[in-house]
Image 1: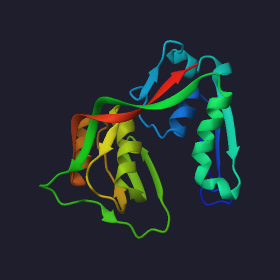
Image 2 (image 1 turned 90 degrees about the horizontal axis):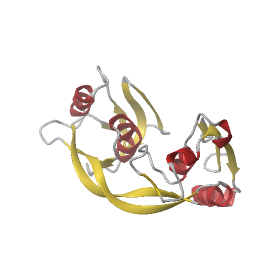
Image 3 (image 1 turned 30 degrees about the vertical axis):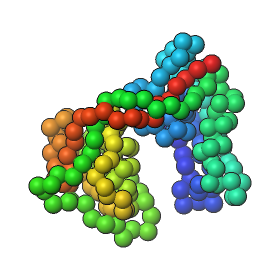
Length: 201
């Protein structure tokens, strides 16, 4: 479980995680949202070294609070402290890999609207996604990556804030594609150079 303290005195200054794996912490620190496909291991590390829920001694609690003048460096400091104190280190590299690319469907009107909300909120489940004042690239990386199992890259060209809602009647490929089509989007498989976490000791 994690907490980011939105709408509080600690906003943008504090993050907390409770009983999570090393891989969960590093994915959060490096903004990696696809499980395993963007995680690599050198010869000194195995998957069990970074994610082994059967062994409670490999789970960690982290609470990081920075000074107000350091809030722009919260995740920079988060990465530094993880590498300083965890038994497994991580670095970021770039690799060519299979991804899904999110694009506009030229034959269908855009089904999302520019947002007038004061703050950003979002949530998703097997029934779909519901967000206000969100970026399409976050919709792709947070939600679609989770649902489709590969990193999803936003190439729609939409850079503003939108209210985005999907309705997934059946949680499978057909149901997800139908919900995206209703928004005026389409998905295609391709290859892109992507950031990856490399674990090492």
